[in-house]
Length: 197
Length: 197
Image 1: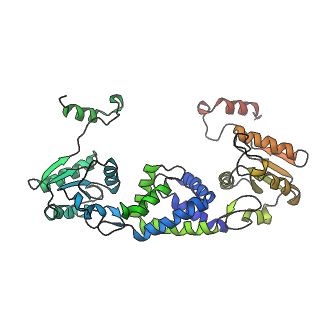
Image 2 (image 1 turned 90 degrees about the horizontal axis):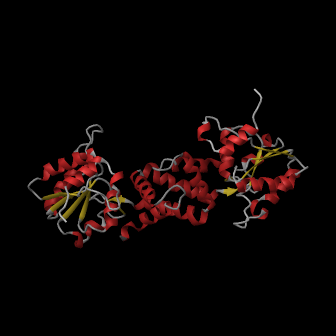
Image 3 (image 1 turned 180 degrees about the horizontal axis):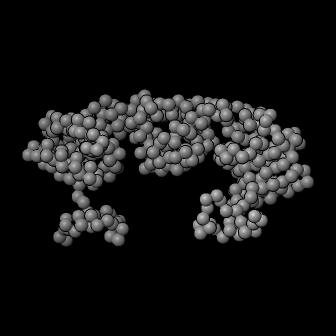
């Protein structure tokens, strides 16, 4: 049907988003067409803007609309603490918690021999440069608790040994977590790192 | 963070799509920004086009870019059969199956006393007009097998009684369906409508 060419193209592109398949993309597109003025037009406009302006911070890899992101330019955040994360989504999660007041460094993935991802692909050289230039005193390795994440953490720790204080996020029982639903590894880690009350 | 205003707005709008919540909207937006030239720009462009051109067919309620959709203008599909569906998604599902060669009529919902949806809200008057003007000989009520769907089917059947042949989709065991996973109602319907081999 030639008259639905654009709608079909929209469905096809929407189906490429993570979390949407062909069926949910069709549902989403019908929803968008029904709410044309409330949702489809604003969404198209803001997508145009983001496509034109979004860029990675040249310093830390965070996503924003500036060459150097707000966090990297803020003097308040230059407290000597640098939190290393795998992905921008992890940075956003840390920012939502509001617990961390320092700066970030987004690796953009993890080292992986299988996928041929080495330190050069991961913004690790830039990390090593930042330690002296930003007077970093502590590097917090907030990488995912996966094998690749931990391998990458070990690699970075090796590179930085002796230069700065190196820490990692504590492992243990998540808040609201029920022991019955936790895996053995988490329980083992929580038991080993148990605290005196 | 003022420099991420547009990105935040994009996440907020994406989270309004059916099937996406705040977390999956964030994931989708990061994916879009990463694949800016491959996905975000084309998606924004096609959304602009669809927002400008998408409309409901004035005759049947199908979604397309023409005032009267391809199916309604195709002489091949004027075979006297009219399939009544609740929603454009149902029309698309029927078209994908390729089994139906007639025309459609999209009600745009079901009658509902609770939500104050009467026949006037549902494109039912237009349906009654189409029977004589398009020489319809058979109306197939392909409404969902829900209470509201069946109420609507009964209402339409009442209106059209004696004027045309009225049929509905067969109820029974879906292809590939396992009896153990089917509800009692489906098994009852399939048993009552059993066929001689």
